[in-house]
Structure formats: C-alpha cells, structure tokens
Amino acid sequence: MNVLSKNLNTKQQIKWVVVLVAVLTLIEVLNLLSGRMLNQLGNIPRYVPGLKGVIFGPFIHGSLQHFFSNIIPLAIFTYLMLQYGSRRYLLVSIWIIILSGMLVWLFGRSASHVGASGLIYGYFGYIVLAGFLGKSIKLLLISLLVAFFYGGLIFGVMPTSPFVSWESHLFGFIAGLIAAKLWAKPR
Figure 1: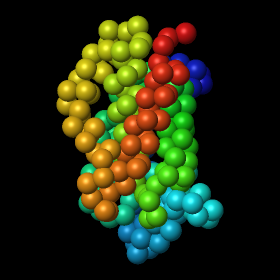
Figure 2: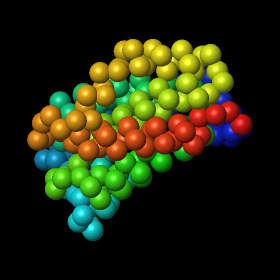
Figure 3: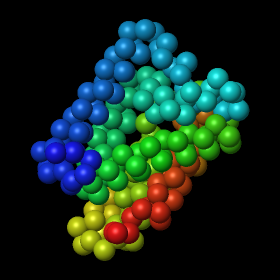
Figure 4: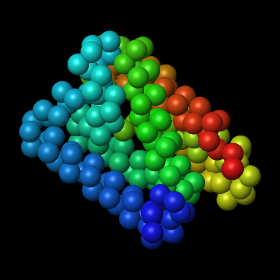
C-alpha cells in the first residue's frame, strides 16, 4: 500500500515525526562533530553558491540551542500537518522550503541563514489559515488551538536580533499562508 495515497493513522504519523527528528538529530550530531562545517550549506542571499542553502539550510542549525529551540515545535507542527495527509504534508513542506528559501535568497540580509524555523513558521501559517478555509471541524479546532498556543510566533517575523533570521520566519509564514490558500480546501 502506498503511504502517499492514504491518510495515516496516529501510529504512522508519530513514526513520521520520529523519523524526521532522528534525521535532524543525526545531521546536528554530524555538524557538531565537524565543527559546524555543514553550516557552509546555509542560504546566503544573492550569492549563487549560496543557493544550495535554499534546500539544505532548513536541515542545519547554528548551535545546539538553535537545534533544541526548533526541534520540538517542528515535531509538533509536523504531527499537526500530517492531519491533512502525507501527500499534502510533503507538498506543503516542499513548497515552504523552496518558496521561503528563494525569498530569503532574493531579499534576506547578507548572512548564512540556517535552521528549520522558516519551515516551522510556514507550517504555522498553513495550519492556522487552512483550518478556516477547509470544511472540517477537526482541522478548524486544530487551527484555533495553534493560533491560541502559538500565536506569539507572529512577533518572530520582525527584526529583533541580528543573529535570528527573521526573514526566514517572515517568508516561511507567507509561504504557508499561500499554500493554505492554494491547497487547504477539500477536493
């Protein structure tokens, strides 16, 4: 049975989350042991070799603190995104990674942008808007709960710290909203 052609049960959804966390943890350990050499794969705006960071940047973190601050919300939002099905999860994830990464590359400040926070903000935007656009009470309740418990994330789209990629936050959030507008309504 093709895992992308059906909705996943809770056990399968949790398995997806565990695999994602395990892969990101392995990448973090390799990055840590290499003296953060993988950070060279970050998204560096308007620098052609920095384009590789559009794809690789979300899977690399600048420090252990950065990794731990992203991994729990990423796991929670991944689980919530899987409520829309595995195919929608993958489609929206790829959309957010590419669109937000390209927008950061085009308009971000000159720095190496790494970390999963753009993806997290994209999921946040998608989950909140998609629940309102869809025709499911369950997904609407998830939207309301996410908006209530994580609504403070919205302040992360403003420049508050020179070492935080607020651009990734902003463009991830915008990419998530666009994805919700494009794909949230049931067929």
